[in-house]
Image 1: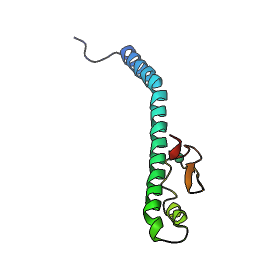
Image 2 (image 1 turned 180 degrees about the vertical axis):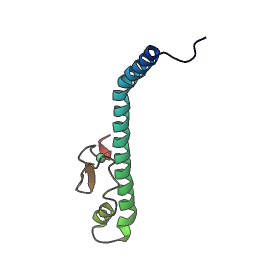
Image 3 (image 1 turned 90 degrees about the horizontal axis):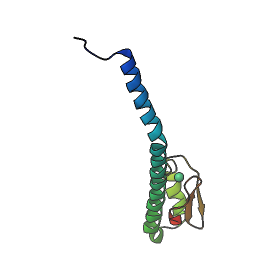
Image 4 (image 1 turned 135 degrees about the vertical axis):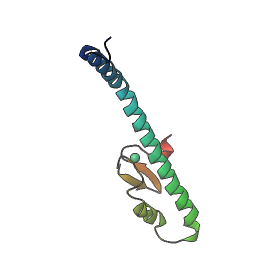
Length: 99
Ligand SMILES: [Zn+2]
């Protein structure tokens, strides 16, 4: 009695797994991108919450200080965070106010 798989059976199984991986890759990439966009917007929202909490009790450019403190943690894709009239926006994901 023969045990195990033949080479042809293994090649067929690997080919089927490769095709399934190839078909699901675009969906996985798009899910990762949409979750990164949501993380970026949530971080923008958290920074604005911190700003609105501190602003009444401090003077100076408190939003600028918060942005400098968190500069590398806002966007998971390293998008450039711009600030126009106390409104944050990411160069890759837009503003949390755009939803
Ligand atoms: Zn971003």
